[in-house]
Length: 325
Image (cartoon, rainbow, N blue to C red; front, side, top):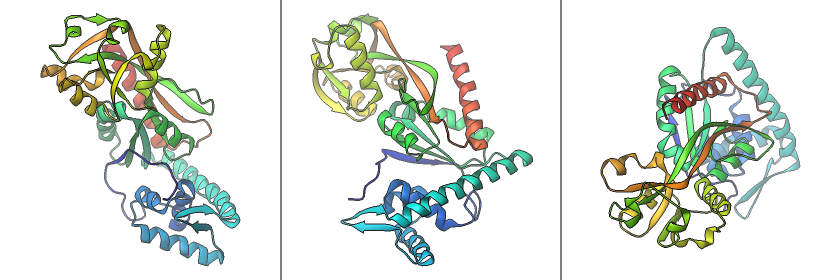
């Protein structure tokens, strides 16, 4: 298997760039740095919207130019050679300077162009970010937005490895190399079928939940981490739950709860449809359980204008959202 981080999903929003638009003057360097970053021809092809043979061809052209191998290919894994490491160090500088030049010219012309690569944890990516991106695209139609959805750990990894420009995740972020700004607070509530005994109460203590079969998100999920911390604060461990199933998405959990397989704790942001249709009922925890949604990006990352505009836009959106809650 090729190495590299696996994404849960990637969405592309906006028009495809026209020939030569938003691209490096030397396409080979862009392809090379992408392969060097993810150490996977397959994932580089996906990120660049190219076929894998086309990516391989560009790398071979660059290797022919330098008359040396830039990657070692052994047992379906790739790694940079010494020459490859050298080329990468210069290529990163070339691309950074190109982006800076492009950004400064855009400031003069007033254009806000992409691409802008975002990452969102599962709950945010599925239920919160689509409406924000819809409004952003109306304001900045020329920005090509790409969205990767993964769990919180996956998104933070992508920010750290420079695979995405901005991440929006559930919970606080402790990495001191990243800028982290709390956007708004989200409530986690107990979810159950309408006929469940707990559905009669508007709020329940964590002790009441321990009596019933429970369904949870997977390890690495921001939702699960917040529940673990909440339970420890109440003198319980996560293992005290009568955990019967784990799923990788809120949709799977909701389907299991509707089917009567257990109760769960989910973000209230995921429940609009089911609550309106009386498919599910909810109750707040006592005391209530809230967690922040945070925007994260690298401290030292050169910020293109599209990135700055998205940060400003999201901050204004968060202020509006907080004021109506």
